[in-house]
Image 1: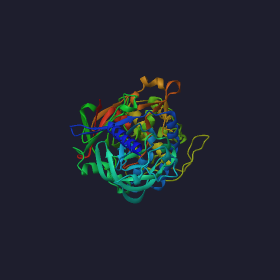
Image 2: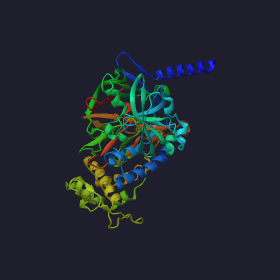
Image 3: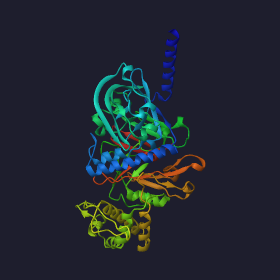
Image 4: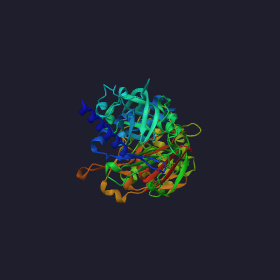
Length: 516
């Protein structure tokens, strides 16, 4: 009996010591949570591709039927959530739930707002058997809620029920935090994931069940020095133990160089802000001339943006893609007409309606809503219009306008646009590049608050695997969100790794500075 008690005490002591190693609260009043970096591998990328195919089908359903989860204010919100494929995520940290704390590895995700971990009551999802599970019966501070919960991701819905308990983040204890115990975790994502759950750091506006986020309670309960948290993602190491830090209560001067450029939050929910032009090799794409929105999202590794621009980037970096019959048919049948209209100074947003492929609603071109038909033999449209032809036309207009701004010849413009039609982002969202060509790839730049933020090829290309089996994956994927919510970019870990990111909850702004 005495031996058993000694073993239990020793186990608890070791557990406490290990937990304290991943965080520190120094005398500057900041709470630092160490993040682990896990390298992507071919197995997880393959699973991610399988789940991404499901995600695309889900996004299509959302757009067609205007589906949306609770507290996802419009179809664009649901579209963004469904994009998420956490197998791409690389950075994780540790928290504790309950008294005594039960340890879980979580993604600190600024692109969502709920806390969830697997429940001991998860009996029928295989994923739950490969991760730590929360046992309410072993916590002195557990309080029952029981309200059902479901969050729709690309790989399926994570479902379960709400509970209350204390949550330990580093040395801080958030009292009586509402969170989700998951009892269903479908898809390969959660089976192969190296994390147990998620801790959302977005705004309450997108919190499922209107649950108060952990960060809100940190501020409300006076646990942090300032209502600010910041991310430093260490991209310079291959070691899992040195993945970076998330700092609650302020910023660590050692994590960045120079000064931060701040931009106001334009819409609460996600950490969303206005963004300007996107440049390829220092040249304007012109696509965001009238403005785009962007989201700083620590739960997404890739950079997602409008297919029109992603295709231009794919072409510039030599990324693989898929050919679009609709796109090539538009160029073949209407390419010269589009150029003529642009040269005649017709507004770009009205061009596709003038040639009959879209209708104009007063602000933008929209599909006539009828299915399109493409003749496989000659690549020509029937007289029936549809979503595909309207979208293809609008992309062609943007591409041609960009080339006209560069004073390219009409022949060169038509050839270039035909090439782009062969570089459309694939349905699984990932395009491969030649690992030996990085030195010849251009910088890709984003304009935020009138400042240009560059990304070098070695920063936006993901290397998966080692040696002869290594693959290089473009860090860009397509996401089309229509106005007024879009066009929208999601700046994930690729961007946040280069630029130290400050989430200023008190002043509702986001700041970027070169990471140290």
